[in-house]
Image 1 (tube, rainbow, N blue to C red):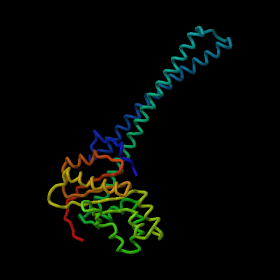
Image 2 (image 1 turned 90 degrees about the vertical axis):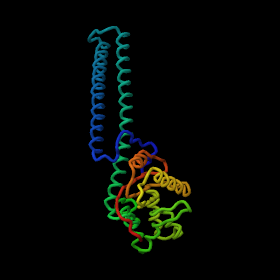
Image 3 (image 1 turned 60 degrees about the vertical axis):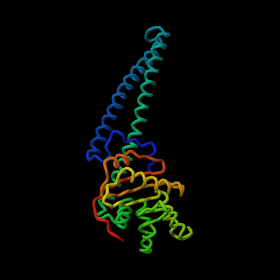
Image 4 (image 1 turned 180 degrees about the vertical axis):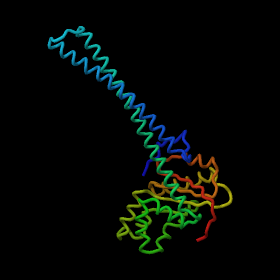
Length: 275
């Protein structure tokens, strides 16, 4: 899973429908900048190579060029110029790599949110659960294998109460499977696969009031509390509401934590079905 601690999406609206176009334009612009620097570096190296060739010819006595001291001085300047260009280009490459990491993170986050949202015809806990496992392959296949043994196994992932203040509609934690089976059954590999991805928590807020920043902060706090309690990484924290304020969306977009891989907030108007 992606460590989102240093992800920076400032200045870009990750919910914009033109996001791919914006990123593509920036990527092309960066590549063109590197291309121009490479042409400059090539020119400097060509001049350096020609001067070295001339120096070799002068040593052999074939030609007579400028005095040796001045010649060495010129070669040193060209060499330092080439080093300077390489250092400058390396800085651009490192920044570009960071940008690409950020873009890949944003694209994957948006893809997960969009796919799960499309799999939610109703704001229902079971529907949300199945949408998650259908669209996240890393945990989908192990969970399908686990629940294929018994339909009652689904209940292990729904309506989980962690404490008086921490409750999740969806909680996918491989260690819960291990604790039931004592880690000695054939379910242990399934639990390990789930733990590789990280814990998945989900909550549906379907009341009439809009989900504001305070509600998102409360959900994040509960998620981080569970992460601290289990000393485990949260692969996905998913909050679904019938209406979400712009401020709340903006807060979720800019939030990052080393304990949470993806924080995804989905606005999905619908009717909550009781289980």
